[in-house]
Length: 149
Image (cartoon, rainbow, N blue to C red):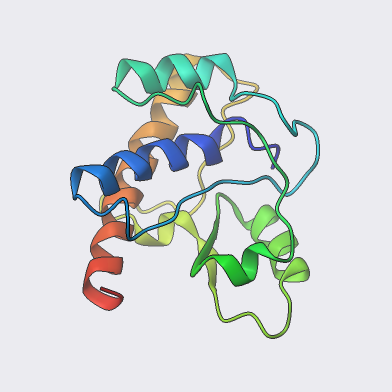
C-alpha cells in the first residue's frame, strides 16, 4: 500500500535469498506501493528493526509508487493482499505479460494468502510478516528456478 512495511520486507528477504543462491545478476527485485503516502520515505522503523534482527538490512530502501511501466519491467508483480491486488489489476496495461498475483501464493508452510498489515499493531505483527514473507520468498525462488532459468 504505502511501501514502508510489508513490501520492503519482502524485497529485503527475497534479495537475501537470491543473493544466497548466487543469482543476484539474473533477478531484478524492487518493491512499490499502490498509494503515494510514503514516496521517498525509508521503511517503518519497526519493520527495519524486526528485519535487522533476522539479518535483513532495509535501511537503503525508499518508498515509491508503482507505475504502469513496472508491468513491462517485471515478470512478476505480486501484491501483499487482495485489496492491493485489485488496484494492481486496474493499473495493469492490457498488453502486460507479467504474472500478477499474491506473494503468498508461493508460500509452502503458510495457508493464508494475504500478508496482514502490521502498521497499527505491535512488534509481533512484524515478526509474523517476516515468517510469512520468508516462506513465500523461498517458494518464489524455487518457482523461478524451475520455470524460468
